[in-house]
Each structure stands twice: as structure tokens, then as C-alpha cells.
Length: 77
Figure 1 (cartoon, rainbow, N blue to C red):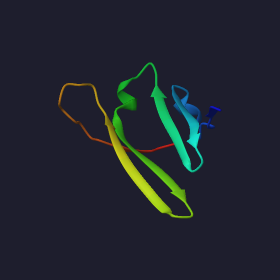
Figure 2 (figure 1 turned 90 degrees about the vertical axis):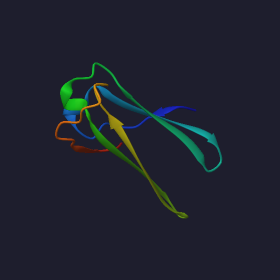
Figure 3 (figure 1 turned 60 degrees about the vertical axis):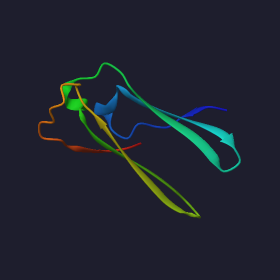
């Protein structure tokens, strides 16, 4: 069963997060960013929490040039 999570901010209309339960206690979440613009290039922070603890991960979305100009942090969904 796949479900879409709600977007938190209106300006993130090009960001979609889908979560799919794989088995009891395991969920696969995928973020899809379409029609990327310079404003989407950022360091994204993803956080998952349950009764056993918290897990965090980071992802850098960039233009492929190898240059990072004023990296900003965006909260994951």
C-alpha cells in the first residue's frame, strides 16, 4: 500500500514524498523533486523516529558543476 505524505509548504509544489510499507516495522520513503530550479539546490535533512529511536540522513541536491554556492538547509518531509 503506497501513500503520499502531505507537503508542508506551498512553495514545495515540485516536491513529492511517497512512503510504502515493506513489512511490519519497515517503510520505504522516496522523495521526488521535479522541474528543479536553483532554489531547490540545497542540503536536505530527513528524520525518522519511532519508539526505538531516531535516525537522520542528509542529501545534497546540486547542479552537477561541483561548486556549492551558499548551501542552505531544507527540512526533509
